[in-house]
Image (cartoon, rainbow, N blue to C red):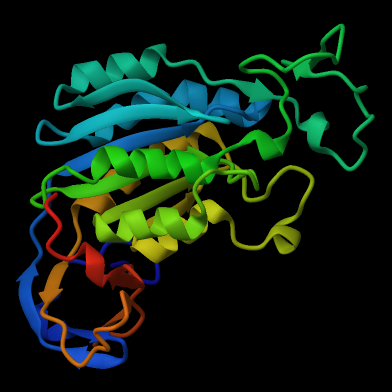
Length: 303
């Protein structure tokens, strides 16, 4: 919950909220404003443009500062596949070390311009064209944008988080430029289903508001943004390294400090698996972040 200035809003009461499920108002059961410990997967795009990759690389260790002793954090990076960096740990020193040692791959933005021959036909590493364009580009090379398996990476992170306890807030801490392949194994709907039935929120830190070669008006809302919006998470945009340092702590503060509301559904069509949720607040000028719905099949699943 944020005000018009983007600041978290404290002090709201149960009576300030309304919940609607499939358009039918529900009675709020449990209301809790206490902070929750976090179970988080830090998921980092491993093929950013060179400038953004350098900015993220320098800022990575700042992520550890947003987590406390009650939080458990795992780290993964992804490109055409996911690569585990560290498993869940409550030890912040372990997280700090994993982030410090992690190296992020990059590509030259010239590979994605309107003129694909601008730098020749071969792959590019750190702005330099390789001697030959034959063979499969190696890890960290100038791979094309459709090599990025964002849906599959978020699905893998969701699988890691789904069995963490219900007494914890489960989040995917995504750092990416939003690039995504059309050739993921898992679809957006499959992945969203997993996230919603497992109560997992996506917080996306975008290091580029557009995919390379497209304006934001051409591209529209990105896939990473869609996951954040539909799960009740949030989207943060960073233009420089100093923005990243600030936004990292904003992600964990927002994820930890949320209002928790529960209800027992009534008035729904029980033959349907998916049900919409709308949360309203009786105070003006507030920005509400809440999951857009839930799956009946996910209720009561041991987590």
